Length: 313
Image 1: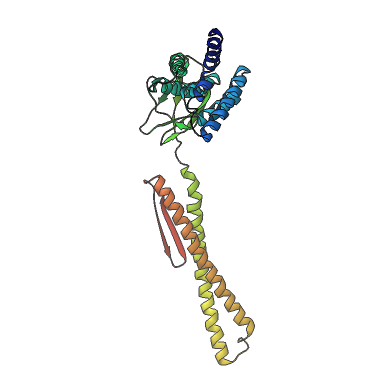
Image 2 (image 1 turned 120 degrees about the vertical axis):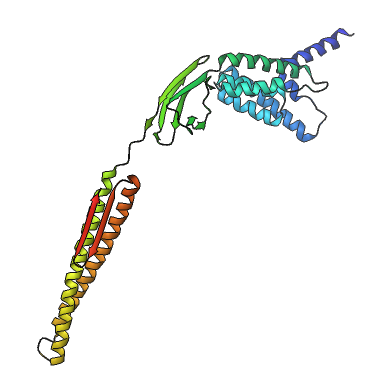
């Protein structure tokens, strides 16, 4: 009478242990309806992940396992995530997760699948330790504040190199006063790849570019000042003659004479405006030039009808 029930129990045990993740999700069946729904959904996701993994559709399998882990976070689901990360080449992330699973403390009375998952995680961690490559970047020169980035992430340079996933990576090196370097490097599994980066000083600023603005600004300023002074003097003379003609009521007191005098005044104002603008442009350019090379010395002077620029640019 007893063999049949015993056989059924053995078959049930085999079904449970055949899929550790599912066995873990069946724990705590006495919980609420929401917990049972989460376990049921996680169970289906693990089934789906197993099928996709067998078909080597690792990216899709990873999404299914990760969703199951979000619903039921136990060692038996986490190890499936870790093994799939390793399968798609994310070895560093897989190693970190496997180490966390192996180091997780066992709970009192936990099922055998949990212990098996920790053993699998321990074995996977050891395997990945032998597979994860290292990238060693040698920077010459290496001034203080040098910044090393791998795939956009800041990495601390070390003598032994940094652990990195196998494959192609972008390496960037930045340092104040040097031209930034960017190189692509392929890192194979199980090897230490060395990359030599030679930094080049930034070229000195183009000091000649400011000189035309200095010279042109001050020349324009001088021309404008000369124009303003000359036409200003002519305007004052024309206004005096016009005033005298109008006082004596001669034919020279006319609208045309007034228009000519006003035109001279307008031209004089334009000349003085040009002088101010030219001096401003030259002064700004001179300031920029002086900041680039303090040794340069320029003096300028403005007087009635002239502008003088002297010095070394």
